[in-house]
Amino acid sequence: MDSFKTAVIFEVREFCLHDGPGVRTTVFFKGCPLRCAWCHNPEGLSPEPEVLFKEKLCARCGNCRNTPPDDLSALERVCPHMAKVVCGRRWTISELASELLENADVFASSGGGVTFSGGEPLMQSAFLVELADILHAGGSQLVATDCQEPSSPIHLAIETSGYASPDAYRDVVSRMDLVFQDLKHPDPVAHRKWTGVDPAPIHANLRWLKDSGKPFVARIPLIPGVNDSLEAKEGFARLLEGRSGLQRVELLPYHLAAGAKYQFIGRTYQPGFDESRHPDADLAPFHAHGLPAVVM
Image (tube, rainbow, N blue to C red; front, side, top):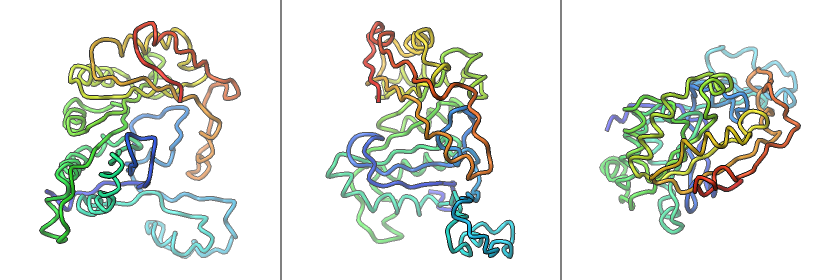
């Protein structure tokens, strides 16, 4: 184990109930190669730690002006009103594994585990591979250094866009017990327009995922006027049909809270579609292809 390898994490959220079976801890990796117009976690886009500024909490005390600009933790310490907070922290593999293993008993009793999300966790795939091996081994690699007893293997899940090299995708996904595979748009031109990237690597990794038989859930953010048409849903269904480990398709309708965080990172939220219109949640195209689908 390379105990000095680090990853930037922007949240470790405990007692999650919607990111896989049982009670779970969800780890949010910082950095994403996509730029989805509707992104709900803009603080996860940059791969580096950054300062979030909540202007409504600022008392204009001036304390932050006397801190070095590259010392993010100092900015947070001197702000008495928490108007400036650091988003993102570097963790070593052993630090994060030890943190997650503290809830091993909860995972075991509830049938839960750990889910990796983001951002895009596959951007830090080497770290994730080693972390997954430790958690699947119940932390036995850490016993010699911290004297704790190893736990049972921990159920692991990942939520990913699938935008990664074939090697990175397969190395990580092969270590997961469940995959939440996000899909944004079935049409390459529209995908590039709304996410900034070509979907070819995603579709190639999806084909491998289907062939592998690995259990997975397809998650589709349903965006009004972008990917909620019958034509787009038919395209998603064609991508997903056929023999595989697909458990279900989850449609996640767009909601107006998406843009609330952008001001904290100094950006303006301009999604480019009509936010006031409710997306069309008709499931018929999926059912026509024999795919189980639900609206979340």
